[in-house]
Length: 267
Image (cartoon, rainbow, N blue to C red; front, top):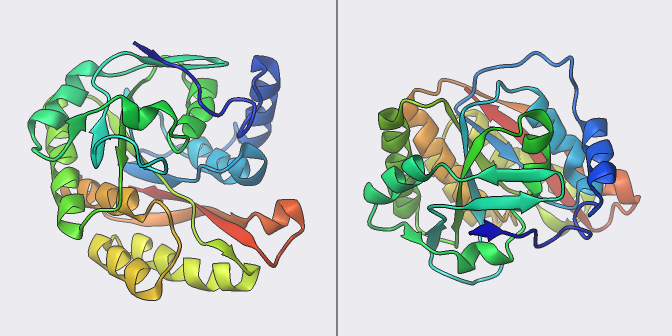
């Protein structure tokens, strides 16, 4: 099965040449590349968050496979949904699913379910793909989306992912897709987002989960990021760093109602 683009022409150009040109503007070919266990990358329209995503994908050595974990915005499908086979079609190419790794992950968890419906209209993973296709169109992907879940589910899914990666023998990077604060002032977004960013830098998944809940930070992908941190720590991650932060106000000029975007690397 080929999953067709859901937000082409909305979040990014439908035209392959225009999309390639836009992504090229966000990629720094001269950036020093690092081996990483995971990254945090935003998923807004590329005109708003593309510079942050580009900073992330510019800084990393590309693996054999990206495991993409995003929030389920649509409410469709299972609570934790994976696609086990097929390919994701994009204007600039297509990316095949790593069937072996996807199956390993599913076998190690009684929470993760195969579910195509959850992925059909979800944009959080799709907007990562133009950057991956631009840099390395031959890599494979494993798509996972999660609804709001408990800390223990994040830990369980993260552990299953880490165990499957270890067994696979492939080089794998986990992409946690998330925007930060939503529809607050620019100053409030920066203040609240720093609290979440500090917990990611500290490699503290429990702290991130609890901080977002207690401080009511409107970070839509904190479940995927928490899950990625559990997996990365189990795989041996020692540090994390902020690659780039900005808000939508820097593009729109509206600083009264912004969305924050953080790009981070975990290594």
